[in-house]
Length: 173
Image (cartoon, rainbow, N blue to C red; front, side):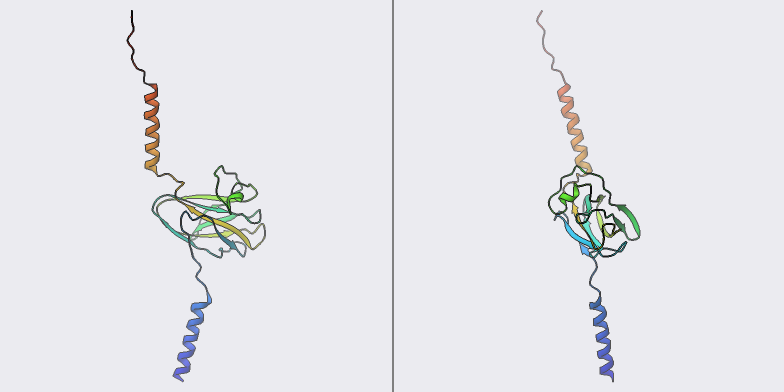
């Protein structure tokens, strides 16, 4: 009797452990586009939550890239951070989502994050139909640090000052 009860408990524990796959995806910075999709309207994507840690500033990007018309929402816990829009962008981005990134038929979002650990959930409205695929990426190298901006502005000021400086010349009478 005890062996049957123990076997039943082990079977129940195993079914609980293997019934639901892990639902978080680790996003590694500067590795390009990663694909994901929503399977229902306003439900978290298959890979959500997207988790990552950055030591400086970074851009978290989302682009529709599959069927036009979808709008995706970015959440940190229950807090809505931003939604994708259909505005154009001047930034060229590589393959996969790169073509969709510059096409106003597809929605996109570029969200600036500072140093820290993040866990973002993405949902969608499914306006183009479900399942609705999209791409995400995390870029750290394209975002200058504040100290870099300060150095660059100081450098421009010094160059401008040197160009305006006049050299005194001796005049012959």
